[in-house]
Amino acid sequence: MNEKSKKHEFEAAPAAEAANTDTQQPGSALDAAVPAVDMREDQTPPKKAPKKKKHLVRNIILIVILAAVLALIVWGCMKFFGGSGDSGEVMNAYVDIGSITSTVSGDALSRAKDSASMTLTTSGTVQEIFVSEGDHVEAGQQLYKIQSDTAEDAVTQAKKSVDSTSKELKKLQENAANLTVRAPFSGKIQLPEDTKEIKVGDDMASGTTIATLVDDSKMKLTQYYSYAYAKDIKAGQSVTVSIPSSMTTVKGTVSGVHMVERISAEGSKLFEVDLVMNNPGTLAAGVEASATITVGSGTVYPYEAGKLEYNQSQTIVTKVGGPVEKVNLRNYDKVSAGEVLLVMGGDDNDTAIFDMESQLKTAQKNLEEAQKALDLLNGVSPISGTVMSVSMEVGQEVATGTTVMVVSDTTVIQLDANVDERNISYIKEGMSVDVTQNENQFMGTVTSVSLTSKAENGVATFPVVISVDNSDGTVLAGSYAQYSLVASQSNDCMVLPIQAVKSVETAEGSKYVVFVHTDTRPENAIDVEVLPDGVPETGYWAVPVTTGINDAQNVEIKDGVEVGMEVFQQVMVTNGF
Image (cartoon, rainbow, N blue to C red):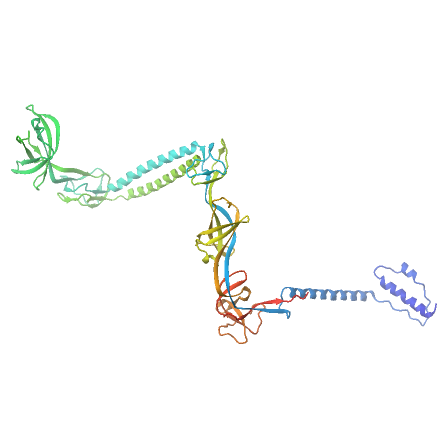
């Protein structure tokens, strides 16, 4: 082997050793495979590469590779998500004339317009069931019968309570009315003799006689005549009444004939005649008088004189007691019917009336509830409709709170929709609605729009009722349906893509603007502190606009721009991959 080949052989050994640094140890088989080399004194053996230095180089290479991959990923994401790099393309739109239709749609649970659930408020035993699920019933038709002694007893007791409370209240009300004493008829007051004058503040007792009221506008007289003239004297005949004490006569009239049989001391049979006469103002009760009657055979005289009576007389007695608050009693004073004579206070009575009225309301409510409970046991349908469910069997004991039957009028199905505050102003009663259920199409009508909103998740919605004719029974109650209606429509209006309208903050607050592309600043342009994403910094001017309705793509522009103007819409980013 020449010296050159020996050198090559020598150099190969360290290379092999370097390649197996991590696995090989000194004195291994790899060392035995390398032949020993004789060295001369002038030869210097090659130096082995340090192991630590090689590890460092390899780690640096790995770090560089990872950094490059990470940078590539970040750059790709920026490209993919529309970063505003040089590869983004500005898209503009032009103000155009078009039509926009705004629709409101959603899902709603269908229900029968009218539904009645028979939920028991008392327990009982089912005796009979007259209908089955699916049967059509009429209002007032008996559906079932449940026996409950408890319910019947409750009605009986409630009726007794109402009756007794009503009587007590009536008595208290009468007492309240009797606190004010009024003249029962027109007449003249006569105060009792030797009686203390009644004054305000006096404590008046019940049953006190305060006056006698007499009607002396007419006077009455009773006379007896012989039966020999029974056929000659009749009601309505004129009579002449003689007043011996004043030696005067007044005309009177027969007011009644009574065929009684009075026997005089002389044995004559007499009948009774009632007479009435106008009082010229000089007649009084107790004055003696007699009346003669002219008949065909001559003048008929009474058996004896009688005494004049007032046409009407009544003693005024208090029916309740109390402190006197007002007095209108003057002897011989004329009063009219209904005129107040005496007023007494009755605060305690007023309180009692108030309490009794409350008790009566409670008793009536209890009776109403008891009767409802009993009616439910008799199972009378409150509406016409279809029996939707029957939840009992004959002989079953049903507990309070059990819904034993449900009747629904499914000829009209209703959907309870919720419309947000942006569109509710466009919804009116009578509007047509497209309804879809199980791929079947129906036509509905808005029948109710609530004015009261309900807020949920920061959004205010208004309940809207949609009614669908279901005479043929194809619309299912209790199932979801989709509705859609045209909330509003604008024809021949200015339109722009929705993306072209931006909301920006100004000194006056938030405003909707479009960025007009023009070389010169428009007169109605405003300054914007922060440009929305993608809007170029030059060549575009913020112009306030008033928006109208919108659909999924376009929005109505009412003012601020003109047809044909070019405005910023969005930035389209070119994908770098």
